Length: 403
Image (cartoon, rainbow, N blue to C red; front, side, top):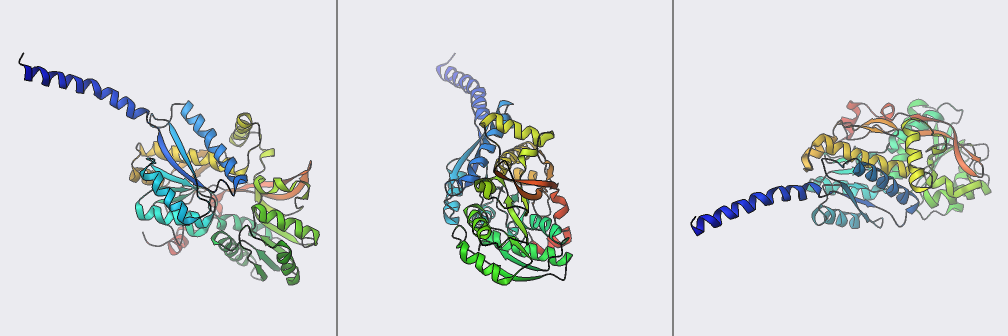
């Protein structure tokens, strides 16, 4: 054999021999998901959320991964700043090799990432931010939302409020997108059910900077029959303590968006409010079916009880895995198309990401607060299916810009 022919043959054999190895190496590369959240400032929510993610990742990878590859999340802290979140999003997609983005708790940060994702053509699963604008007025084809929105949860609370004799309402909410949307949604839903109600006061403290004494005084001066509260985290704790000390809640119906979530009611201990109608997460009563299975698995893994964030994190991974499997690919357009009308089996039951607005039909638990064994819990609770609290396709088309 001539030397040139021999070398050509040898090169061909070497190339063929290398191909299977290259394919195996590629197949074993993890599928990277870029996760952005406010881990330092909102650790009470973000850490349980991260644990929920890690629990489901462990289960998925133990079962063989997705598309024959392990799944991996790269976690980054947005510092609560939209500009920082956008910078991180670009780094995750270009430097870290992420195939899509997820996360954020603060709605202003979520809206910033959503806008950036639309501009760049990145798929973004907004796991937590609740502002209605995310899927309606600022909606875009690349942004999908997991959690029940402010509109959905506010509608659930308005449904309960409409059954009472209360006529005069006061509201208190953080002064940013989530709070604004939550108040607007409650007003809209309640006035449709009870045209006779009136709103006599609105308080708008800066998020995490509440002057609880001043806010309570202002609400008391308005003499409302009922109060709609949207504060959360440390602001909620300050508001509850100050309001209780000054008798603001005595003889009044109080409706609390998120106020029954363990992240926010647990720190209050025996000071937790009594008799509020709230959305939350009664993990302590969930001991059967998919709900109970998740609680048991989480407790076994971490020797701790789940928070709502834990469930959201777990469902985030479930949603992403389901989309990847449906897409059969990690290409952006395939993932985006797969999310439309995607059905996902979760601890809450099956949910669907509606193609009309990219909002999932995940619901929420609604109940009444009380103190049991020294801690705040929800009693007389009921799971409300999110699909029952969403606007019609015609209404969404009016709310959502043309795509």
